[in-house]
Length: 124
Image (cartoon, rainbow, N blue to C red; front, side):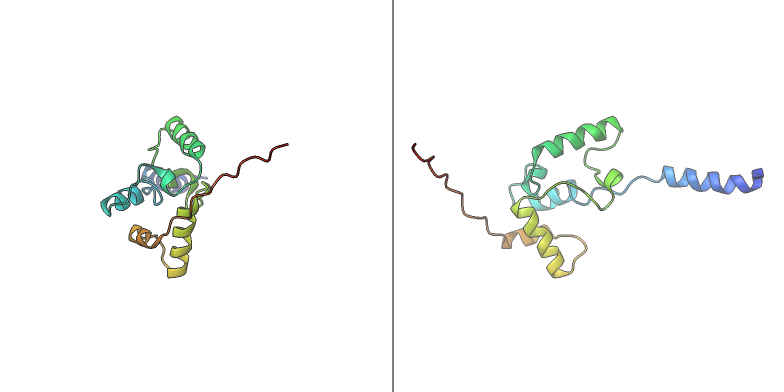
């Protein structure tokens, strides 16, 4: 390839790398919106199931010099974290309403599941 053919390719590659990743759609912005609406959101575990995944991803983001709230930078739209009951309900609402993004105001319609009562162990 000649230099004239390579320059446009290099320019395109530079632009692609220089454009910042979009902000995370399922983390910080949703948390902020839910807090503004009065929901007691402290972290991702309000809708996601495992604290381990949050800490592992924060460490991975730090090692890659990324914002720890920018899940889309690595995962794109396929964020692998498991959802808890609330997160599963919210994802189902988004699908049911045909929305691209979940609206945190919908959380007002979420009903907490009844607390599970631990059964005493049987006596031998």
